[in-house]
Image 1: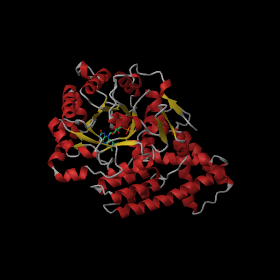
Image 2: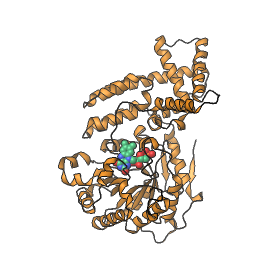
Image 3: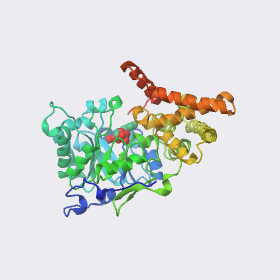
Image 4: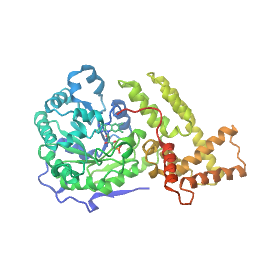
Length: 485
Ligand SMILES: Cc1cc2nc3c(=O)[nH]c(=O)nc-3n(C[C@H](O)[C@H](O)[C@H](O)COP(=O)(O)O)c2cc1C
């Protein structure tokens, strides 16, 4: 399968797109952006050095960000500085992301590391309460004039280091002055940022209210409008990227977008970008056919992560390594809850995690055996590889989909239920010895469950529907490891 998107053929071509503009200022940084269309998002406690190197191992053409760093603490606290900014060879291109509302502090913080980064980014997206208190992150967007003046000062003081911004969409609503609300306000802000010398803008296409359980589709139409109205600097799209197919679709949907960023999906599947290739001559985002069929099991990826974490120890194993292992192995916990319980008990010793990962490996072998048996018993002849690919991608996207049940049902959950039953059956019988009769039961039970999940054909009352959704959601919900962000 090869999907090719040629943006030169899309209808959303900007009249002054960079390729046709003579006014274009082609800085080194913009060249860098042109050649690297894939971005690993800044993530508190999760886009640390070890994880960045892991993602880059699967695709070198990634621009990565540090987690959000408090500019104030970075300037004032030596230990904080050591903990929160770690780098090594192979870690470039790298953008350091700071939060803060004081230009002088942001400049001072950046100056401490400016030789080790390719750009500095101002966080304008963090919606957490701590950001509200500090008046930084997305709360700064309530005063766009202040944002623009901070960026202006940073650009002037830090030259030639590029300054970039990561924003959310501005809120809608009549209570907000017109010039800084909604899509029009967001476009105005981006134009103003461009005018004061901002080098690139990443748009997380949600507003600050659109988070947690209220999370919904990112608004790609908004990103397209922004892209069409900002003339010379790269615009990066962020939000809703769950799979490699989504990356290609996003590129197609937005049209002429300069890059795509992933956060949650790549946490669950650090190989997300592996098979994606950007062809710079033709402006095509496509699958690399030799890589698209490659399989990486969660245990393999988790082991590689641990290798990096051993080489470049993150400052807090419990807060950084544990959530990574949890997220990478997430798809396996539905087959063995004890594995999760044991992971929850892991502390600071990386060897403890290695043991869990070994057991994850054994479980995977069992699941793959189950797949072979499925083929054998259900006559899915010749589809083994396809099923295997689908199954592994279900495992690796499990974390992203945990609170998005509607997107995943029923086709994907169907596979999962089928597998789970095979495993349980295996456990019950100790060795898998299914005769023709039980084979049918197995399949029937699976179909029944699936049928029930879809509402069993009968019309459900609102209450039943709600209960059903709750049940579905619980199936996918993360439990255990509390992730603070
Ligand atoms: C664990 C976690 C930590 C995050 N930390 C940051 C951060 O430090 N700075 C930031 O700008 N955004 C942060 N975000 C938001 C992401 O960068 C991204 O904008 C958001 O998750 C939407 O992308 P997605 O749909 O690919 O997950 C974080 C997200 C997650 C899941």
